[in-house]
Image 1: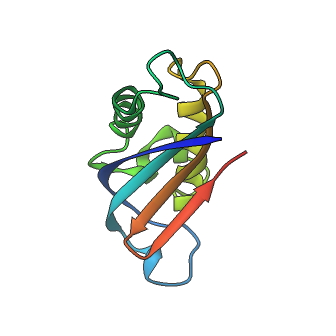
Image 2 (image 1 turned 60 degrees about the vertical axis):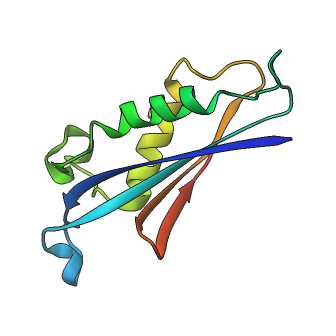
Length: 123
């Protein structure tokens, strides 16, 4: 089994509605997101998936969040833009993209809201 992981980053603000603490106030993060793809079979070049293709698609998805107030996005109109909900949203968007094929499947998305705090989502 092979695992390919790429990372990209974006900057955005949010607040957690209903939270009893500092995170209920507007604040921002330098978010880092990793996408992990797994598979057993390599293509004719010896790759599971091209790093460049995976990273380009991840960056395209993250552009929707970059330099935004996440609470204002339709995606987070009802649910809080927590790291958990971001991870699930990014996973679903990446899994629905057309870049995956062959034996390559999206395994997980990891969202770091700080160097010491991260969430991993997988199905």
